[in-house]
Image 1 (spheres, rainbow, N blue to C red):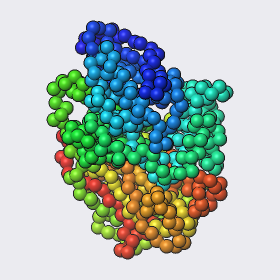
Image 2: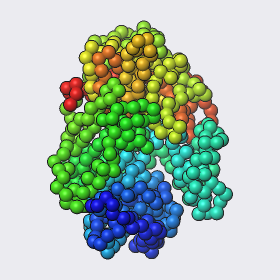
Image 3: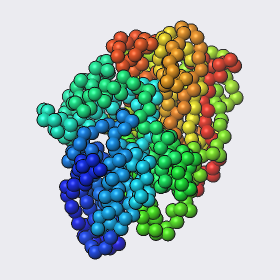
Image 4: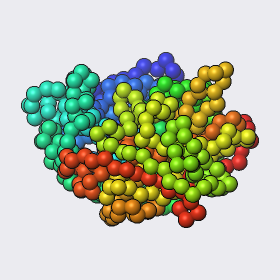
Length: 572
């Protein structure tokens, strides 16, 4: 396709659905004779008015569309907290409408991240006849993975409600401003962020949201363990392959599980064998970038995301024999020092890993500057205690936009409510890929509390300069939900229980001279809500009490960090 080709834009096209409701769309297509494959993006965030130039110049007709009840589209919006929203049927109808246009050749793909990716999976399960491929990326298998791995996550969710979803509803209902996300974001940044993030109780918060959002938020908070998405039941209905992108620091990196489940359960051999995943050291808004939250992972970490997507659609929508079908299912970036290496695998997590256990030990003072140790050879009998005060929780180290990202854990080394266990300086590299696990034997003075485990790459100091302690991944468990979100079992005072904390996905190489570090604490606020330590419903209660929490390590209580190690040469 000639890069000088002009682009024809058709704004505010009305697309009818099966029930007569009309969706608002922008059409971008080559200003040339002929029929072109189509790409559909459906979104609740306001249909983009630009950004598709490369796709059109590559020979695609692109349609960006407001979802039902959002911005220019008619109807009522039902958020994805509900089991049935109508987005599946609307998506099906939109794909078939696009395929029937005189400028489309009938071959259609779908595109989009996050909520927009959720919409693609919804329509794909209905199998519109003209859908040939998807590029749905960074959306987990279940809403509970994003918000309820043990507790409400107010930092992202409250801001999302107030600045992303509420403004357009306020405009449509004739309520006072803010009426646009930019207006709401300005208000948030000026004076309301701290006010809202310190709010108690959360069950009362929905009254500050407009109708059409408030009711759903209230019901969702009242049923935090409800599985609304059930993607594990969707994959068996999906007949086309998907290209997924995800990041080690993305709060939605549960998206990576789509690959394995599609490989196992996809409806067609093509869907099972050709779904792909590309994962790097990125967070939610920085997919494809080398710099994330102030850290530079090197030029190799940067990828041309639009170019890769175009190549994907060139194969499936244009039948361009570009070799994508012969490429491995997974390409992932293993972080290492100030750079890293691209690796390949047949699935995620890679199957050829070996679990290596590092036992926790100490002299009873595993705080920063203390004697906490990680060793494959064993440790001693002991216990490490710390005070968790929900009035003064460990603060989240994240971006101004409240997205998780890589952080330098040195910034919190003045706190006494974080336990720190470190290996000796490594004599040889340790590379891992997959899901690390912290197996902890714990007790508490409270009937309920949280435990966070965070894996850190501690760089060696050079020339007297203190080097960073770079977060790799983390996980958490709410003690009452240690056996699953559907069950509650409070702690008994002084009783030691086992917690298995699966950390998030990662791939990294701890270089010689570095130390492997495990941090244990009981809060990460406001990324996660504070556990009130009362055993009551934290979403409904306002009482906060202190807790004395403990990690036990002995032959009877072998607290340990288990790393999925993998053998690779130094560089590929």
